[in-house]
Length: 422
Ligand code: LLP
Image 1 (tube, rainbow, N blue to C red):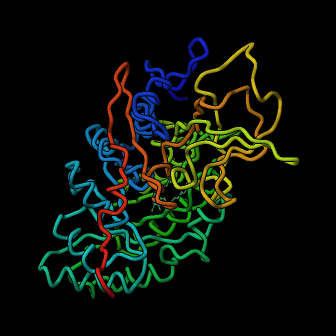
Image 2: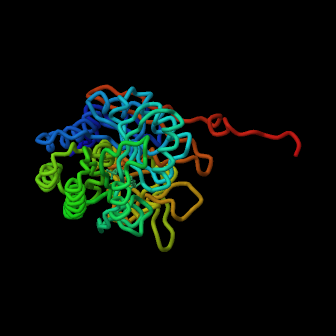
Image 3: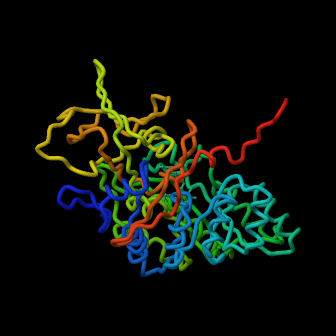
């Protein structure tokens, strides 16, 4: 469910006409619905009410400061993966005790800043990293909390690029190594090992992979407890899938019903790290049709947005629904009942939003909405082909707020240095 609906053939975001936003701020343009964002946060929060987990929104999904601020003000924590994300978290005044930090490659500087800030804990992914954090904590004279990220070796049945919980993936520690660390925990004088963490992948639409991973985690937690090692936190990561096409992902309630009984027996504090589930449905990318073109074998709709603005179709072959911002009826149109490739202007054949997509009649100059673009949309955008990164607008009820200005050509070259003579 989201707040993008047609009213008399015009697509609205809450109570604002998307076409008006496109005309006011230009295209390509990301548009987010405040209500959809909050609804999804609360759907999860309410579904898990019984065990009152800390929901650490995964910043990488959509790291716009306004989005973060809204969620932090609702009580969310943040799941971060870099010094840059920590900087954002601090900027929106997220209490450090609501920040968890995962990443297989945390640098010395990143670790130091996070220790100084006093985050809830690092999710540690290797023995070398653990030793490094211990050393840095000692140097700073500040005891630090860590949690062990376990690779539970489960198959999440999602795109191979976003699978993270198999032993062939670079993430986390296998159970045996984790056990060895826990048994020798006294050796890490400057660390307190507070919990266990898993994150098995993204866009997972069934609860069963989560259930098998959490079962493994809980049984390991129990085994450690029997050995006298009590771990206060269980962080079950993110990964909940959303509807892009005809998928029927588990609802927050269904997910909670499956996993709460397993988690409850541990009496540990639970953490969730959803990104896509919260931000995905709340955003669209609005693009303008530049040209409609037919070749002897294909029809193309060329739009002003491109793979640098939304890379998911190019990178994962991801499906995003594409809707006309204004539906034209009984109108002469260049296209009817035909399939089109919807493509951008970038000089790569991988630059497409859809292949062989049947699309309702439209004309050059019309706007299209690429749905479900709130997560891993803007946050994965780039300046490839020297294209300016686009503007972002947040709609709340009947008001629209610019939450990121469109970049200018000046922004593109801001950090470049031209040497007079080599
Ligand atoms: N926690 C950790 C440790 C993660 O690595 C991730 C995502 C999340 C939480 C949040 O996962 P979510 O709830 O959003 O599924 N760019 C890809 C998705 C990559 C996900 C990376 N890690 C895409 O566009 O599909």
